[in-house]
Image 1: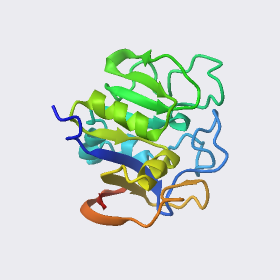
Image 2 (image 1 turned 135 degrees about the vertical axis):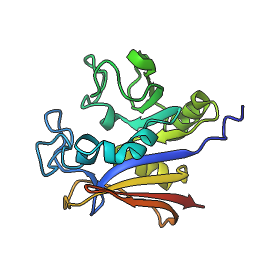
Image 3 (image 1 turned 60 degrees about the horizontal axis):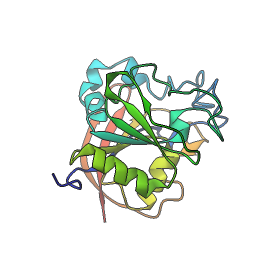
Length: 206
């Protein structure tokens, strides 16, 4: 199969002013000052409180054949891997596919239940994407969060499709989508308003 047939997509939930997390992120408050308890409940209410209404988008989010995420999304451990940490998602993460985690600190792959294996990539975003493409065997690769990771891939021209889930409140500060990203030409492919979120899909034009 052509290893480059699949698209590189990105799903990200953001506030109206473009933030995917607030300031002061920590293990106790993974999403920082997010207008709630720090666990992203307001940002992600559309997933957990109205899942039926958003089933199409939720299914699409986990349909990729491989995933890339930043270390910050994988967990709060900074520096060397000084303790066991297997992600925020319990023993059976929702990915059910290889996940490539960007980090500066080597670590052995971590197999989980349900077909997810976390692989730790220390040599940059292009390497992580190349490995994810190979693992996807022609299927789509999804770049997960956080916004900092998405911004790196977008700035490098490596994202084909941005799927933004815009929730109706502002955060005012935090980790923001498009910070440090050059001007983009976007083509709107799809948009759908639900009760707690507006879903907008853009194709990134070169």
